[in-house]
Length: 404
Ligand code: SF4
Figure 1 (spheres, rainbow, N blue to C red):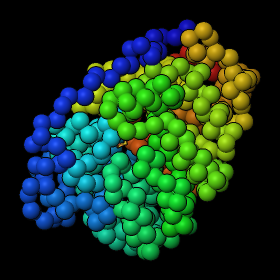
Figure 2: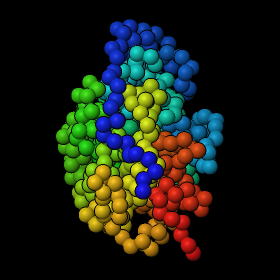
Figure 3: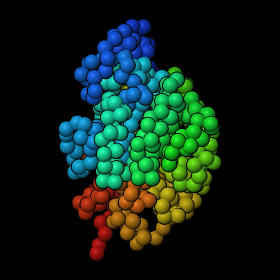
Figure 4: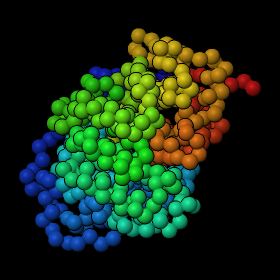
């Protein structure tokens, strides 16, 4: 029996975006300054430099900045991240308004772009040349197994992605540290997808984020005055399938924004049938977003989806072999109990999912430490879960502890 009510469709309604005062629109407070940027910018320094923008500057995840040695700090039970996550940056910020996102346009009312939290952490802004210099010094021994460029919705996003990618591949062999693109389909063409491949990108992903067209419209389309369209995202993903080929494209999906377990797992199956992968995030309300009043995904719901997704993506189990109840919750995973127990015990299913690194295909380089949960109640494990973690996971799954 489920311990919690799942995040049901009806309860996951974003609040409406408020009107932004004219004096805060389009990064105006930053752009009316003329202060030149000065090296690394740590969020909330309130140093408003309008030229601190891509392609010369990018923002880095906290974990990447700590791993790179640009910022001090420690992470709970892990010492580094294996993915160098970069985010394009502009004083005007992202022009979309996705309800769950800390970078959304409506936030210009109260926070300058470089100071906005995203996936629950701050993103320092750093000169791209400085990042490349540090990594290029010793690529063979770099802690990073992959680099990823996250595009945002901005008129310069494509051109600047090409420039950042070229700067990287000019100095760093993409066979040594492969590059992923987290794309913004709304402003991209098929030719743009091809260009990222020609410039050396290895994997192309689409941040579908929502698991159904209805959740998509409600959280990142017309429901929140945002420009994205489900059909456009699929068009670009299918272009990526043709251009990048099998196992080299995929979609990000956030679990718990009102879809059922059956719906999200059918989407996972569709992606596998196309030859791609799904990279999953547990919904974790971002402060300042239009969904910050809503509950995080209950752990039992998340664990069932995490486990079933792993079976579909890496163990050749099909969604049709699984059984669901009338609420769409997983009731049977489609394989024998003993085999399921072994897979739970291995723990890989509960690690962060994403583009692979150098360990093995089903272990993501992109480990996003604590991007979708607090360390006290981990959703995606950024490290190999230990015995005590597996015991907790089994409880959350309501699958009794294995008797040896
Ligand atoms: S397009 Fe991406 S960065 Fe922009 S608001 Fe939506 S999720 Fe956030």
